[in-house]
Amino acid sequence: MEKETDRYIGPPTTRYAYAREFWVECPKCGKAALVLKKDLVGIGDDKLICHHCNHSEGADERLRYTAIVSRACRNCGESIEVSIPNNKEKVAELRYSCPHCHVPEVYKPANVPYRLKYSKERLADPVFGLPLWFRENVKGDTLWASNKEHLLEIRNYVTARLRERQTMRITTMVEKLPQFIKAAKNREAVLKAIERMLKK
Ligand SMILES: [Zn+2]
Ligand SMILES: [Zn+2]
Image (cartoon, rainbow, N blue to C red; front, side, top):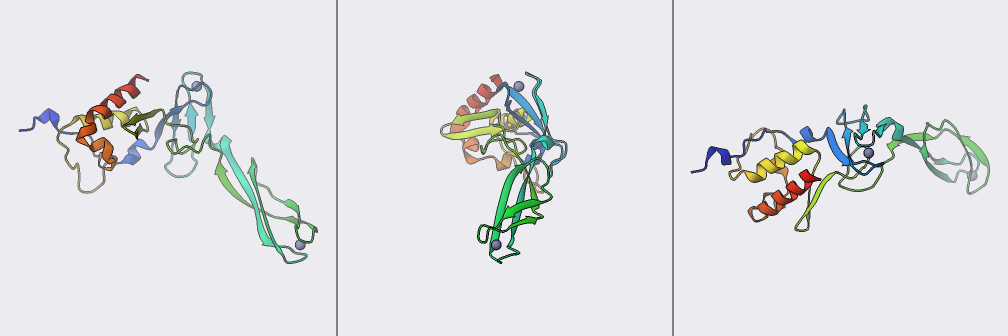
C-alpha cells in the first residue's frame, strides 16, 4: 500500500503559471535578479529587478525598430531591399540611393518592432534574454526552472513515489516534464541538482 504522504498532491497547474516570474542572472552584478512578466503576450510593463545591486529596467527601454524598404525603384524599376535595424524610434523617412541606377529617393519604410535581448541563449527569460538562474546539469541533460516555486514543485513531484494524473481537462506542468526528470533511475541525481540550485 502507498502511504498518503508518498502521493504527489501538487496543484494541477499548467506551465503558464510559471511563465510570469523568472529568476535570471543579473546583467550588472551576476547574482539572482527577477524578471516580472505582466502579460503573457505583448510587451506590457515587463520589468527586470535586482535586489542585490538595485539594477532595474523596463522592457520598453529595449524596444527597437527595423526600418524596411522593399519595393521597385521609382527611377529604374529594379528591386530595392533595405533593412536598417536598431532604431530607438520609428523611422518616418529614409533617403536611399538605388544600388542599380544610383538615383537617391526618399522612401517611407515599414517599422518592425523587436526587443534587444541580452543573449541568444535558449534557457533564458523570454523578455530580456537573460540566462535562467536555476539551471543544473543532470547526467548530460539540463534541469531548469523559471522560479523557486517552479523548482519546488518539480522537487515535490520527483520526491513523490506515486504519480497520478491530476486532471483530465488540462495538461499540468509536471506531466510535460522531460523524461530524464521522471525516470526513476535519475531520481537521486535530479534531487541533488535541485538542492544545489536551492543553495546557490
Ligand atoms: Zn544585480
Ligand atoms: Zn534605380
